[in-house]
Image (cartoon, rainbow, N blue to C red; front, side, top):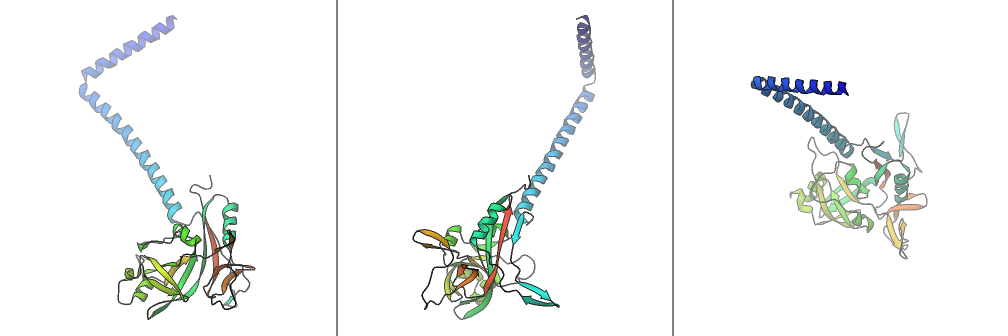
Length: 276
């Protein structure tokens, strides 16, 4: 008990001496206190900036890069003796395959299904061959698709096979002739002989020319029969002009596009921060 009293007395005496010293040298006291405050604030600011940059960089990488993407595509060609030879009988991935990939690949947050190839495009007397990509609406989240005007197609338009299309800037310029590329928005063009409304035009690349005459349309992979959604194309009469295409052995995934579209693929994106 006596030891505790001595320690308390020593602390009180030390505090008194310190207070006297602070009163005796107010300038030094002010400068010392200011230095401590500045030092603590600098450390807090430095750690805050570091943490903020780390979070921003992680979010940017997850959003803009393919570091979290898993792409599954069939091998459509091979190189034999220095020559590219097409492969026959390769698998065509379907919406069902995309759903399975989403469920079976760990950490997947969303997926996109694509079908690519070339298709004739025309508007009035202007004609071109476009690199056409049929896809689900989530494709815009996977790639750097920058819509200059208009919009990208929606999941509802994909589900209902809406006759809409998004054009690359170079293709829109080709079809518009001497007019502005954005003039085509809201107008109908023909793609593989079918009318489609232009709902958006992509921005031109910031560096260099646009490499392809690109176009994007909803993937027509769902039809309804007796109130049940099924994958593939409905049966058509022998006089139909739109044969199904892109068969996955016994099941087609796109109808009415001729037979130029064949290379399909599934891309899945894992959740930010995966693996945990």
